[in-house]
Image (cartoon, rainbow, N blue to C red; front, top):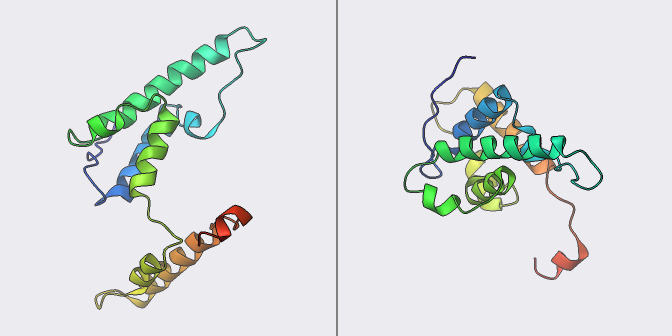
Length: 143
């Protein structure tokens, strides 16, 4: 298996490239599933699946921590699982598609962009806004 360098995450700059590179790495070592799937139940089983999950979760967590800068490592090292760590980093740096300010900034095109690049940017923004969660009654009063 070939390895590839991943720049350390040290803030919001480069987060998207970092995220996609880490996901590629985690998929290549077959541990990315712990970020998205529920852990197996320990009750009534032989425990081998739970042990494999725990091992893979540890590897996943370790790979993510290994590509955080020295400045960010103490902030995130306290998360006990790969999923909790991944979600914490995403909460900090993932762009919020629900923000109108972000949407407006995304639509400001640079002069050096081609028409196709502008269309791709608008399409990306449309895809992001299609993933908005459905409003829940308990949240409406606070909006």
